[in-house]
Amino acid sequence: MADLPRDDRADERLSILPLWAHRVLLLLIGVVLVGMDLSRLTGLWPCDIACQGGAHYQTLFGISVTWPALFAHALLACLAWIDVRRGRSNLWTVRLVHVLVGVAVFFLIIARELDLSCIYCLAVHWLTFLAFFLTVPFMTRRVSLWLPIAGWLITNALFHHGPVADVAAPSAATAAMSSLEADRGRTYGVKTAPWQLDLTIELTCRSCAEQYRPLMDALRPQIAAGRVKIVVHHQVRPSQAASRPAAMLALAAAAMGEHASAMEVLLGTNPDAGFDGLKARLGEVIDPARLNAVLSAQMAAIEALLADDQKRFGKLRAPSAVLLNTADGTSKAWAGDLPLPAILAALDGAL
Image (cartoon, rainbow, N blue to C red; front, side, top):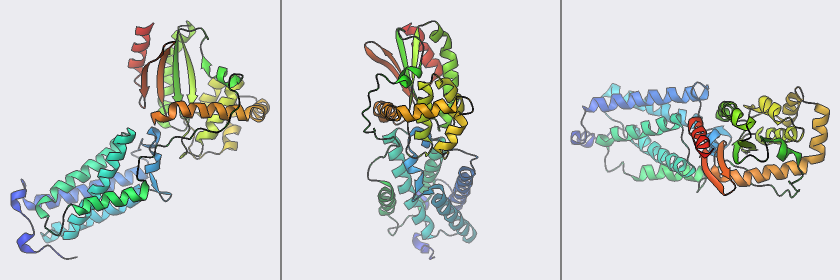
């Protein structure tokens, strides 16, 4: 790898730090990024993008995008280490950083369009931008803005030309839902309650599981007093194999009047769990023979009800959401991280 010529190796006028400090900071950023990639792969620092409907961008050809990121960041750390040891900047270090910043721009644009927010992902992308600014003194005419553009175009081609939300398309099932017992079984509270909370939950979503129980516990007094009713809807994420079967089983349990029991069992379901395994788990707390009978008799209706949930909540691009409704329509809505104090305050104000 050729070093930059001495006469245009660096322009100190573009730097507020000594040039050696730029090289050391680039090395530090490379090492930190490698450490973050390893923490992501080992699960020490989880990423919540999938829970927010962005799972399409977590894998590439069936492989976690963290693996190619780890390779690129390790290469950056190695090149920066060579630069520090030699006291000169390598043209390939600058080129690599400029390609990576184009990749970061792509993901930040997608995050904005899909309303995704993850501390881990943001930290990776903004560290990449910091590395870009550290390379400014080492830029030459041979290193121009076409490299970030190339990085963006390549990433765009690998994923998709437009944002892809991880929401299921509505099913073609046409069974009548008015007679489906599951629609009543997933409703908590009396039918005549003046206020209705529509709550959508994705059963494999970790953050959904953490938010559901505190919300239901906090609203239990209002439900018991007949002031509000809660209708629990089930979101489906195609990227999670267990998402649809878990939702179907929850609705089947609702038809048996056992929706609360199903939620206790299925909340936080392993995304890779299979239908038979989930059904066996649910059969430990409700009658398995009756569950099988409901699934056999009402499968089309369950599919239709689930499709209606996707049509209604899919545009939110979030696996958890709350809509506060009156007879006049929706008056308040929250999606993603559900702020319990704000929801309770809005409900108290309405009541």
